[in-house]
Length: 205
View 1 (spheres, rainbow, N blue to C red):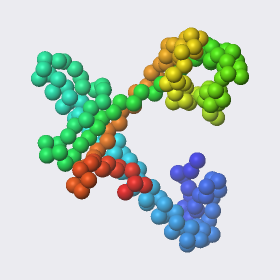
View 2: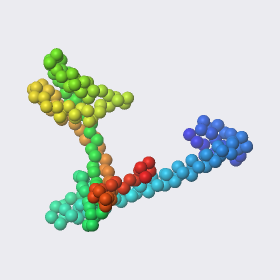
View 3: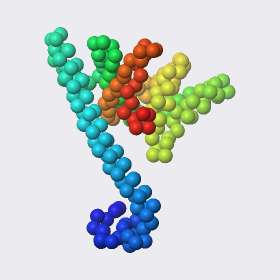
View 4: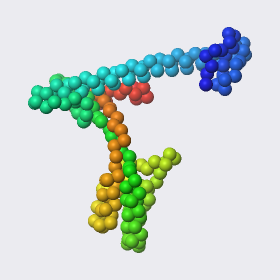
């Protein structure tokens, strides 16, 4: 951690050591200045984007609420996905609410039932289904199970009663841990007629 109380005439290196300024090369000083200046600018733009996102979400929520009130429906307008298009069709924005799904203890029961199914099917089981099942319950370095792979099992067209019971256990185990709002902006491409994203990602511009 950098020390803000650095004696005059010294520079602090990445390991916290105090180095006499006369021993710091000019190119190291220049590199330090460039990195510091650009990263501070990046932090300022980041903070501006945070405020812009907050303002955008508030204005979209207010518009949705106003629109619903015209039909006698009282709502805060803060939930649900919505797409808004400018009157001339040149611009479009999309507000999306992405739920983070986690699984409860019922998932352990589902895994046991699925293991029993695969074992009972034995030689008759499709090798691809076996691989899919094994892959679905693999955990990452943090011990977490990939939500998409588990939910993918529910799309398999298998009518075995034990399997269907396992799919029910998966459904029962699903919990919404949190909801993260996103807002994306688009401009119509006059050549193709489609909408191109207005990127707010530095790497994409």
